Length: 296
Image (cartoon, rainbow, N blue to C red):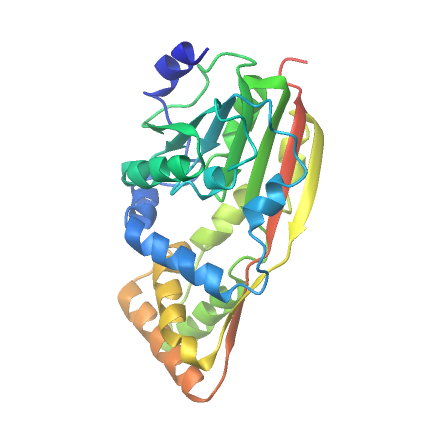
């Protein structure tokens, strides 16, 4: 089955809906920094349950043999499949950033799974055979390519499942408020929406069900409540988090971006010196989709 699967996938990639490919590469190319930030999120989350385990708990996946991890990154979602699949299962991680190949395959190995990394370039997955995939998983990526939802419905077997983890609408609201206050202090006028707001508008808890329900007969939604909390001794972690996320919240068309970011950090430092803590909403939403309706 996977001979056709490979042939038709290896030269394909996502449609990046409203997101410039160069910008996407810029955000995620520094994999070491990305991994550092993932550690920051784990350390400062008030919800200590792994959202990926929450997403997968209760699903019967032992018969799933062909799996896609779309926007796989380091393979954290694939790693959460450890012990849930038949060891003979074949899983493919798909990502536009080739730097993730080695860590993704390491995650497959840790999970005891046979994995392969597929680099995608300039097209879609629309040539994967119909009804050929048992399970599609996607964490923190579907907002880059929500136009793939019909294709995922098409490639899933009737008994298949599509499991998505995405940000909720309140994602980064505290950082956005901090940015707006900083712009006011600097006397800079901001026009248009922020990059993170564009992403949330693409796919989140507010519109996810509406986008998924035409293509799946059953769509279950789970809330994952979480906050990132930084104490006065955690300034370095918060600065690194702000630094990594700046491409999400500082608009491309904003002049003097480095000055704006520098002012935000200096304000944060002053804020912490007063003995204040800082919290960031990190609520996520899980969608579990069954009964693909493509063609029906």
